[in-house]
Image 1 (cartoon, each protein chain N blue to C red):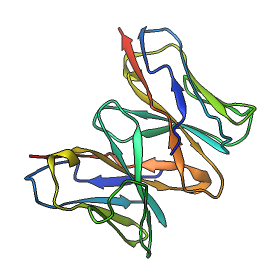
Image 2: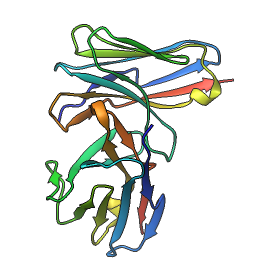
Image 3: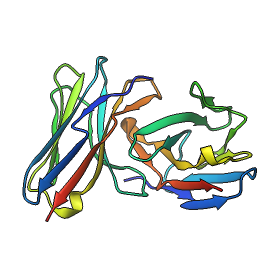
Length: 111
Length: 114
């Protein structure tokens, strides 16, 4: 099935810098979720978005549900070394068990 | 958040043997669970949807006789990789849906087939 278009694929940043990543799709989604995956672990839910235009924060993380319902972005402010990992976006439609994932953004934070 | 427990975390087996992976929802009931496969540096690929009390729904290209799924209770789904071969080596992850479309994942199982 169609995957979401997630960018960038990877980022190398200095500790303290802000990070931004996004996901786009040609289809409308009713729910957008952002996950973080550490090596050898399953993804952990960071933020869930349910309404177009919704802006939600979780500590230093902020995510927004695009107005068109075809995109979402995730920002991380003042990055720290433990932010290292792979971040995945996921889109879900109502009454549909199918959840689509982006290819992931691999984040490296240099101390 | 909801807890999904997956076991084992890793398994090494000989080619031709079968391996069972368990996925449990610890503090909620899950009528639907999902099984994914993930190759290194790649995203999660949905293999099948596990439905409690009924047959699993497999994605196109996934062999149902190869990857047996059983969802016998509201808190347990199992994936059995039958007659495993080296090409089946991968990271397998389960997930379960909680309210409002939130999906929680198990910690994954790294399968290595020698």
